[in-house]
Image (cartoon, rainbow, N blue to C red; front, side, top):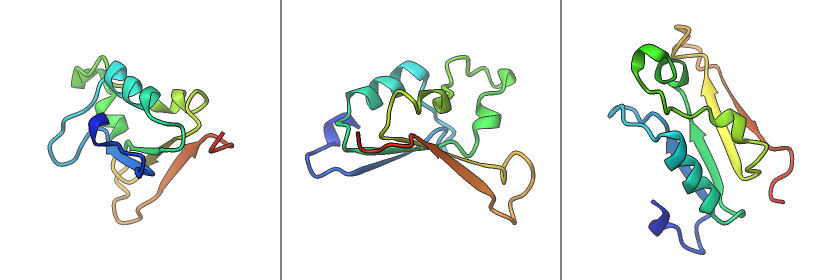
Amino acid sequence: MRRAVTPRTRLIFIANPNNPTGTWLGSAALESFIRDLPREVLVVVDEAYFEYASHPAMGAADYPDTMAWVERYPNLIVARTFSKCYGLAGLRVGYSVSHPRWPT
C-alpha cells in the first residue's frame, strides 16, 4: 500500500479487519505503515469488527488496538461501531476518535 501513496494522496481508508475477506493487519505492519506516511495524509482505520477480531478466541494475538495510537499519530482517525457487536445493525450507531490537532 505504501508504494501507492503519492504526493497527491490525501486520505487512506483501511478496514481492519476487512469485510468480507476477514483478513487483518497485525500491530507491527499497520503501525509501521502509518508511521511512514507523510503527516498530511489522513488515515482512517475502520474497526467495525474490533470486538470480534480482538477477542482471544479468534487467535489474533497481534491484532492492534489503534485507539491507543491516536496520541502518537495526529493524522489517524479510528472509526468503530456499536452496530455489529451489540446487534444494532438497523441503527448504524458508531463513533470515531482522533487527535484534537490535525494537521500538526
